[in-house]
Length: 151
Image (cartoon, rainbow, N blue to C red; front, side, top):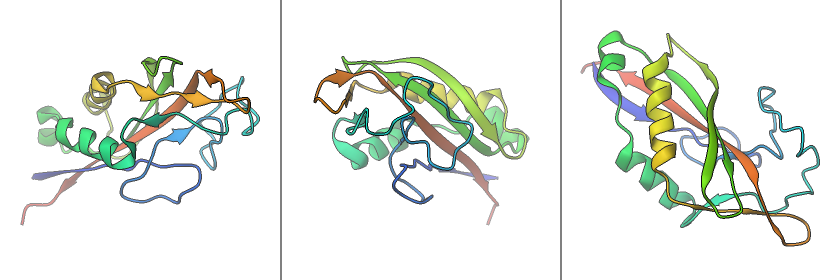
């Protein structure tokens, strides 16, 4: 099977698309699996965290670094893996975790690859609250792993 890594990064303001931005947890939209008890009002952080360089830089970074795990390719594993990360006021990412995964036998190797990519990421631009102060906030970054059939 030929591997195809399809990335789906979403924002609360955009519909599902092949590539977009991470979902700020302050406004989770239709993703009921996302809950941030300290961030229930979307007005608290009018400027959510963003990848430095913008959307295109984030897409380039992920596409350059992401590798479909060999064991997942051989086993035909595919699916969507979500990584939750806290963006600190310094822009550094911490509190990484796999929040939700689904698809045909989505397993540990796909989740570990998504976590590996997020751990490689440089500092982000942190969130700002309504007063313009830097505040820590969470993002949810979905990765879609899909194998394409041999041609």
